[in-house]
Length: 175
Image 1: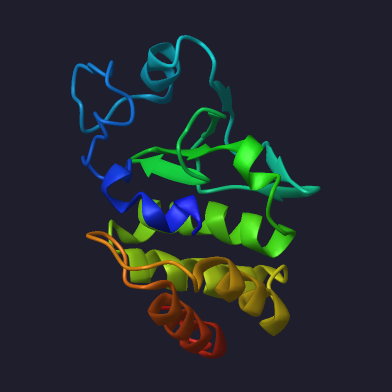
Image 2: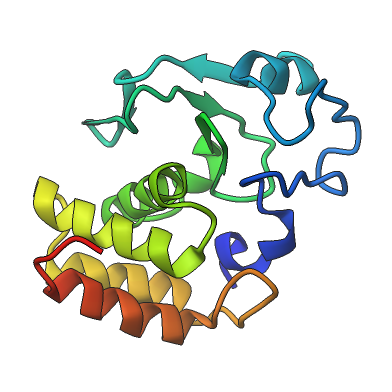
């Protein structure tokens, strides 16, 4: 089962700080660490990539003016705090390009649309379609990636999310 789905309670988004995942976190404001504070709490093992300079499989990605933190010790493929994204390149190396780009865009979706997982999923597939990196076949790759996942406190089941993303992908209005 993909770690992206399995660790819903670990989600590093919108004030749901994962103390079980990173027990030494003690930010001045635990809901909104800066990228620099996050890197400091990894013991310097994470790095910050400035906005507009993050590249996955030759594709330059951006999420507004938000930087991306590379943390290969993150227990998931990606995560987000308000103001920055976190990507685990070690885990991302295991999945196809459409899945990688969807994961990044999903986390970016949290930045623009908030904590709701379905909304972030829809944001990601619609962004991929608009930007030209996501085809119907790519949606099916994403579905293959998440369909085995069971639901948890933060996520619907993978098959439910997949059906919702297929609908979002086919809609040309932005949700």
